[in-house]
Length: 116
Image (cartoon, rainbow, N blue to C red):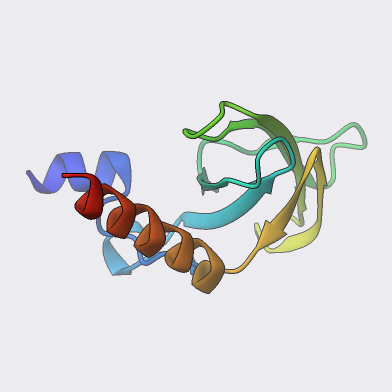
C-alpha cells in the first residue's frame, strides 16, 4: 500500500512539494479554458524533467485534460539545476490555487450528493 501511495502521489500534500514520503512531487492546478474545469497536475522533479536546449536548466511540458468536458491545455515549466522553478506558462488555460481547486471539488461532491 505504501508503495502505491509513493508511486501515485497519494501522500503528497496538494499545492506543495509534497510530504516527506514524496518530496520530489510538485502539484499544479490548471483551469482549462474550454469549460472552466480545474485539473490537478503532478510533476515529479526526478523523472518528468528534461534538459532544455542550452543544457543548463530543465524543462517539462505536459498536456492537461480535465475530467469534466475533456478540454485540453498545455503547461511548460522551467527549472534550474537545483530543480527550483524558474518560470511557468500555460496555453488554453490558467494556473489557479489549491483553494480554488478545493472549492470546485466541494461543489462537484455536493452536486453528486444531491443527485443521488
